[in-house]
Amino acid sequence: MPGITLGDTVPNLEVETTHGKFKLHDYFADSWTVLFSHPGDFTPVCTTELGAMAKYAHEFDKRGVKLLGLSCDDVQSHKDWIKDIEAFTHGSKVKYPIIADPNKEIIPQLNMIDPIENGPSRALHIVGPDSKIKLSFLYPSTTGRNMDEVLRALDSLLMASKHNNKIATPVNWKPDEPVVISPSVSDEEAKKMFPQGFKTADLPSKKGYLRHTEVS
Ligand code: BEZ
Image (cartoon, rainbow, N blue to C red; front, side):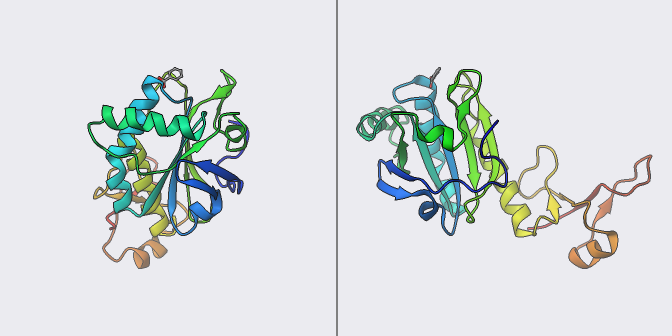
């Protein structure tokens, strides 16, 4: 995935959207944002994805996270398409802005390109309040994304960030399940940091690196 990636600052582009023009950093300020791209308006998979984002919007709201779509057509086309999306999802409203990119000038700058097709992809960046990319997905146009996984990954980022990245979330983790303690934290530090205690897995290597704890 050439171009901006994890840890990079998203360029502060002025974008035209269904909610008017704004600069990306103004939109990102003070909260996390899920920025997701789509190959084009009036296409079947994209219609289901944007509808699902509308249905899940309350979950993102609950977490104080903003949504920002992008599709490679103009604002008027987006507005017409939103009527189809809302009809398809039986009334879920598309309340988040969708960036217009009819000339496909923005997607390369945001690294939302499918390198095989050399065209727009289903990319998704989770951007922190510092306008830096914290996580990226890149799916081809033929594969719709899983919004439960977007939320799960977001919850992992929020949890790790809340604990200064001293914890990490294991495979298939969901909120309320135990987390693991980062390898950068010694047992002595872990005792202070996690007074609730932690459990070290007894593994053949006896290296004591897999430590679970419960946090909220
Ligand atoms: C779709 O959104 O359905 C789609 C877009 C581009 C290529 C294939 C499918």
